Amino acid sequence: MKENFSTEIIRYKIPESEHANFEKSYEEAGKFLQTSKFCLGYSILRGNEEPENYIITIYWTSVDDHMQGFRKSIEFGPFFKLVRPFYNNIQEMKHYNRTAVSWKRE
Image 1: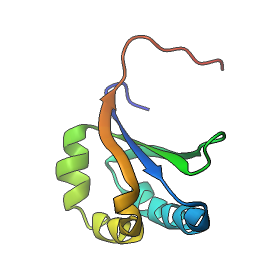
Image 2: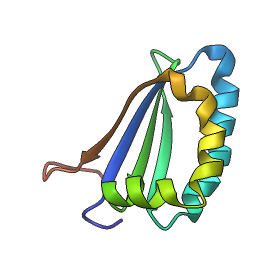
Image 3: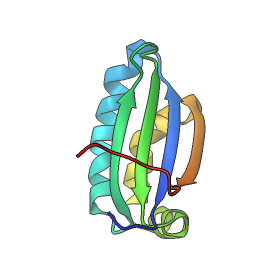
Image 4: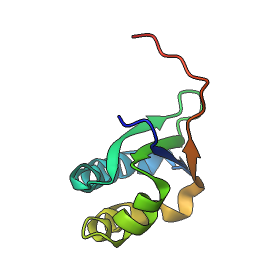
């Protein structure tokens, strides 16, 4: 992954009755992220202690590429159509940049 990328964090609160629909929607929407030249990867986390909490992490080439590139691309329309039913469940949707403080066991 390139060094100067932007991480978008989206936190959702999804009722248990909607977990399967939510995960399926993001699985389908992920296909449009994979075809975008602006997306470097993504993951979906579900809370262990609070299973209604989800965190979507999307790695973009830059904030500008996400906002001006992806959101104006042909991939955005079908992507948004799949995740839009859960838009009102968003608790946070922000971009973050890495700092020099990081460690990961390989």
